[in-house]
Amino acid sequence: MSNMKTREQPKVPCQMDMEVDRISALPGHIIDKVLSLLTLRDAVRTCILSTKWRYKWVNLTSLIFDNQSVLVSSQDPTIIKNKMVKIIDHVLLLHNGPIHKFKLSHRDLQGVCDIDRWILFLSRGSVKEFILEIWKGQRYKLPSCLYSCDKLSHLELFNCLLKPPLSFNGFKILTSLDLQHITMDQDVFEDLIYKCPLLERLTLMNFEGFAHLKIHAPKLTFFDIVGVFEDVNFENTFVLSTVSIGLYVNIGNDHELTLGTISKLIKFFASLPSIQRLEVQSFFLKFLASDMVPRRLPSACLDLNYLSLRINFNEMDECLAALCILRSSPCLLELELLARPDEEPVPKVAAKNLQEEDYQNCFFTQLRFIKIAGIFGVPRETNFISFLLANSPMLERMTVKPASQDGGWELLKELLRFRRASVHAEIIYLDP
Image: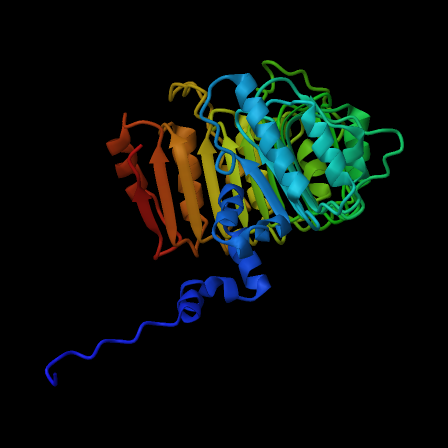
């Protein structure tokens, strides 16, 4: 008997339950945080864990219906639509409490009329973030009830038609607006921006219905735009610090310009006294250089520390416009020059080089990093690189990546021969 092992006493059932279901004993706000980190599909599935979890998900303040949270295996559009409508209706019917964020972005969903019902439901609450991305079909016309969501702070729309009612007074506390593949009239766009007095971030991608961009936004700090337009005019944007702007249309080929009496460069920078990061993409530098190009801007860009330019080195006006911006940016820390890849290089003897006087009065006392990509090694490109190296005493690193391997070895040997104002400057050659 003494050699027999003592049998361990079984645990009390209630103790076992407590140890197994410790997560249910967590404070409510912790459980809410755990649920918020799950996809909506997984959050709803927690209802099968136990009776305690059956309705915990209904208090979620963020509802995201995307391809992860709504799985539809069928390829039949009708089946996809019916299943998605059923799921969203079911979630909204059982939901309890406020909905602060609503996102509908399923790649198989078209602009069905049921979306009107869901937006009407949200407009009666306190939704703060609304994201609607219609990936298939025609532009979805937003119902008028969306414009009554006066608690919105973030609005994101994809493939939508905007036509606010006459009674629309604006989104008074909206701080972020993202519009991509949208259609709206010229006056509607201007009125919308004007009636969002607290707007801080504005993104415009591929828009139709308006071509003159009049941006009146006193609180705007971030502006990102890519599309086809004829002009951009900033008004009361004195705190705008980050701008990324790209014009798709090749100026001079598909687009007729009305040349003004004032330089486009001067006009563009006049309302950007606080600019810190600037990205000029596609053909926008060509747009800025399409009329008179000054040697220097009337007011220096004292806060500009990052500059990225998409440039065709074979265009004299674009090179002069780039030099004007560089000459007016005494505090520049990082510079990126990207040769436009959609244009064929001009033979080396065909392009007229900039003269020595064009490079005068350009000294970069703060410039640390330079990236150059997409070049072909033509004289105007190598002369520009030589000029940068000779006038950047604080330069730490220059990275050069040509468009092709043709002539790469000759380009590398030429780069290494250039005089450098900085004894610490490192030249890194990257294979294309």
